[in-house]
Amino acid sequence: MPDTGFHFASPWWLLGLLLILPVGAWLRRSMVYGNIARINRYADAHLLPHLTGSRELEPRERWRRFGRWALLWSLLVVAMAGPRWDYSEVQLFTPGSDLVVLLDISRSMDVADVRPSRLNRAKQELEDLINQNQGMVRIGLIAFASVAHVVAPITDDGQTIRAILPAIDSNLVRLQGSRLGQALERAQSLFAGQPEKTQHSLLLISDGDFADNRKALEKQIRQLAEGDVRLHILGVGTTDGGPVPGHVGRFLTDSRNRPVESRLEVEELERLAKLGNGAYLSADYRDQDTGQILELAVIGGNALSSEEEQVRVWKERFYWLVLTVMLLLLTTFRRHLPAPRGGTK
Image 1: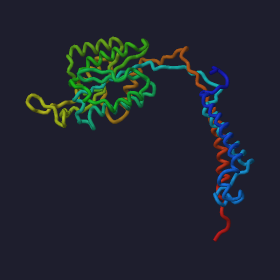
Image 2 (image 1 turned 90 degrees about the horizontal axis):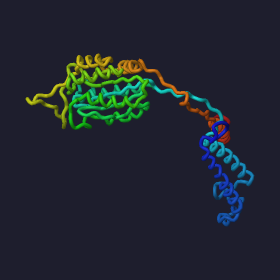
Image 3 (image 1 turned 180 degrees about the vertical axis):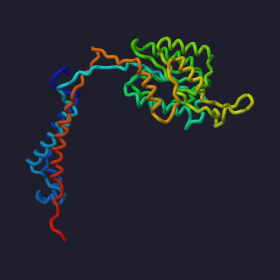
Image 4 (image 1 turned 135 degrees about the vertical axis):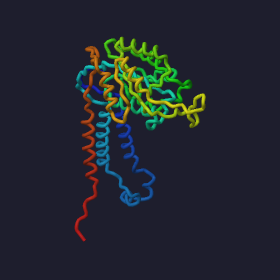
């Protein structure tokens, strides 16, 4: 395919023009052998329209209709082939900021102190984040409980993450407990594969009920902050808390057979966000929290462009042919409209 000048985007569609030849051959054959058809044995030619309810077209009318059909068919086939002849060069830009979301899927996230549950609220917040992103940052997703799993690498395609969200559930992990440290390590490995000039940020969505060693976790977050990786936190739940659901509709119980309660650890999450040079926000039904997270993730990151990374955007012209076909068909419909009845009762 030539780089410039007139050409077709999908030239294989032009093979559809060959269909005109067998249709024309069939039309010619039907005209030749029409007079010796079996039905002619039962009535004279001028009486056949009264017998069959249809009339035999004159050769000139047949070929006129065939020519009209061939014209419409040719226009549609050429339109499907995608004629184009001019283009514009578009400079490619990539977001200058990466945001890895650490989603807590431990059993405490099933607490229903916020409706429908903490985990469902967290997934709603993440979907809002993707909807508002509009190419501002690249997003990755790590789900963690006792073990961290990379659900989606850092990508520009938010639709991929959105499609995965309904399948994320606390039942995906057998060993319970929320260990943030391993999730932070996985996030570091994702950032290592990104361009050096990009701004790296983390978004932790959790209730703050962690099982990590406190000093080790603080040290890990400080090291990330020293490496210009900021930790933002979105707290999910209420300070009143609620019982933690278990299996078969029951609640988890402690050694004294009392229900295990889980509360939103606001002070702990605020402290971790401060250590990570980030911000702490409480999740709500509005878009302000996720919008603020995106604004914070963009700070310090500039969109990257490359002179070598350009895309040629061709200006498609198929619609001209489609409009022509529509106008031709419109005259056909107008011709077959019933005539208005005259007179009044």
